[in-house]
Length: 142
Image 1 (cartoon, rainbow, N blue to C red):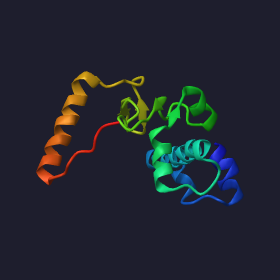
Image 2 (image 1 turned 120 degrees about the horizontal axis):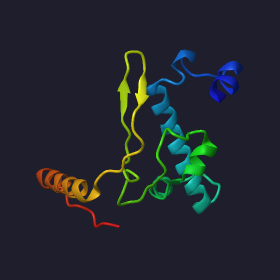
Image 3 (image 1 turned 180 degrees about the horizontal axis):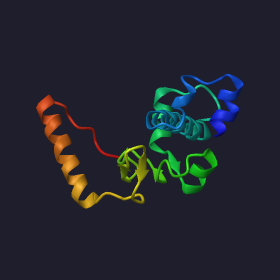
Image 4 (image 1 turned 45 degrees about the horizontal axis):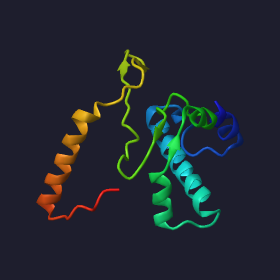
């Protein structure tokens, strides 16, 4: 509603107003939120100045969004609270499931955390196989 009130009602909307609130629109908006918050994180560390690529990467790798910060951003319920790092670019990887009821998607579960003890070794093995096939020398971990 705020986007409609403060952006589209003032003639500042990008794209069709009917797209606001659709799943693709929300994904795009969340990308913008994550980028802006990563930049804000980096600027808290490096100062309010033009940032280098490495500084932006640092901001992404230290991005934390709590339940309170998601609520303050107006993104409550769109993302599970998370914290990113060099080791975990997924922020824990929580998901929730939706179901199509014939007219709309309805969320049918709470946030579900993956079984990292099961999933992480599979990811590591796939990454190592890919690196070997491509002749890539893996970087040292964090």
